[in-house]
Image (cartoon, rainbow, N blue to C red; front, side, top):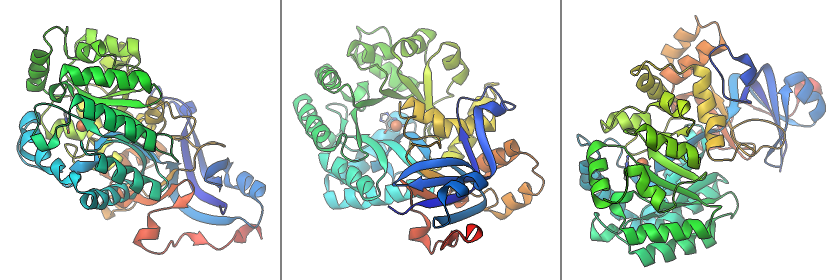
Length: 448
Ligand code: GUN
Ligand code: FE
């Protein structure tokens, strides 16, 4: 594959920042470059150093004055809810029954699933998101559509068929045996093929019988290298319903613990109304609580308590949760994350926000050796961000005097318009669809 030298203001994290002044948590090259070869990062550093190593024949993609970041990562969303964003008025259980369990029925139809899967991937890319963890519908066809669309774009994607055998319309229910067999078949077909990873996905305790939870336990035991995703403690009515269905469990978290579903590869959407005991169980099992701020505000679910997760030593990640989440943009998601934490007297520095969308989420997926930061050997998934993309941002940026301020403007005012380009395994994916790539110079003119 052709090598390319991406020039711009390179920003990549090496660890979680301890605060807004923690300059050792990241590397920043004001005139920086990332050399890409064969879909991987070959070198990162100052433009002068990297260009010298690259030689005079390398092609340059000049993105100055934009920022060059690792591709953004979304750890929880629902691909069949792409057309259900902005469904009015209801909290979780009513919203699921009124809108979502109607919408997801369309995904039995392979043509519909393929159409939405393609648009879904392009929307992620347009927002600078190069990896996401998604729920598909109950239909295996939706999983095939999802991974096919990801494969066509060479994206590192994680997903799985939801299993649900009760408290849902008949057209969306499987059975414990069917959920097991279909999941097993899909794991065999997709997990580890190219950049695909499978997530075993019992939707949540309400829509699975104890028999299906047993089957989920068996799937997890047989496929310890697959992810596990479900929902936990999002809404008070949901918690009351879930715990009434499993009266032997100590609390909602204990339902999943009893079925062996909590482990290092488990992603638990929401985790809002949690006791210290429950958060401590996540800490002990290394399961990840996923903070979905736009969704939690939209459905009126509640406020994720990040500081309590940190204090009790539990892992957490951040995500859009489209279509309860109201945007595909991780920038808009961090804007709302800032406000949700602010309401609880917790402060989220812009460096921490950008860490969370990149290396933080990669670590939550145990994928930091491949994605989430830019270093030699990583996959070349890269987002190019323009902090002056909107007139109001351009005006605001005229008086910004630090990188921290610029990042905060990006997350507070930014959206997909701020993503100037996105590279997947070294290939530009955004401008290719939207028009000619103006930044591409034919060769390294300055070095010739
Ligand atoms: N809990 C179970 N299913 C869902 C879903 O699709 N979205 C959200 N936000 N919560 C859920
Ligand atoms: Fe969700």
